[in-house]
Length: 124
Image (cartoon, rainbow, N blue to C red; front, side, top):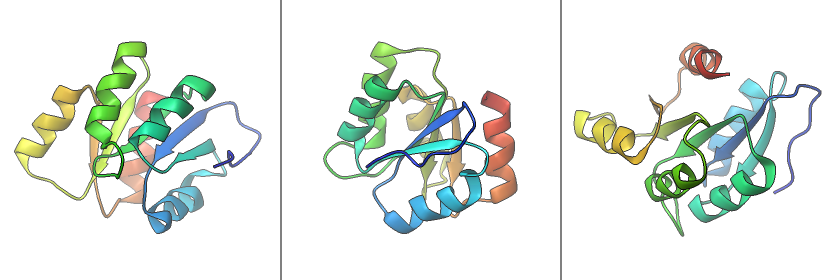
């Protein structure tokens, strides 16, 4: 999918297979950040290589390749790009799996807009 363009220089790759979840993120963030959208983990890896985003919002559960596997493969290319996991699962074991895969942080769905913005500000 083509990037949503705005005039800022910070680019966020949103790896999210549910269109309504992406549209919510777009509504919350597109005035501040340039967003690009991957529909699955494989697309996220390809778009990471093509666009070199400043940060990745990575849904954990996606078709083709899940977000944890995509994160592991992206970490082979970059150890410094912040990756924030997005998941409906909030158990401690899920947090551990996400962090072990190489994510920098973890947000649960439904997202809290203030927490989302504070988390992004922490990394970019």
